[in-house]
Length: 103
Image 1 (cartoon, rainbow, N blue to C red):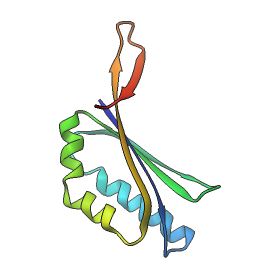
Image 2: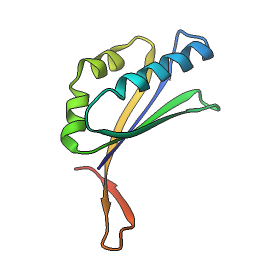
Image 3: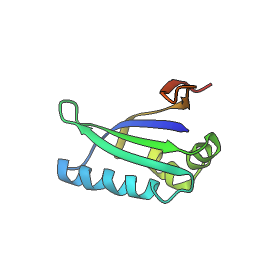
Image 4: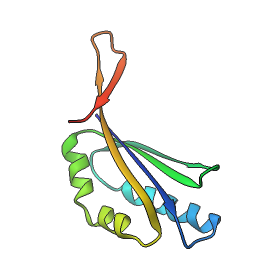
């Protein structure tokens, strides 16, 4: 499993418009095959948004990052200070989850 963390700010919109915009982004992301789970939060102190996506494979994440939906997102004039990171989640022998940075 691959865990993707996308953080960004939204400009040029009211807070309510930005919330609706980010929710529509999250729903659009949800249409991709290989997406196991997702969630979004807004950090009130900074106005920053965070979208967490769990992908079934590195290939699914790669396909998403090469999609038209992702391109429209990263090129949007309303999305600023974008950061997109991912990690690989593995199960250890005792079934406890450990996380390490993706290579």
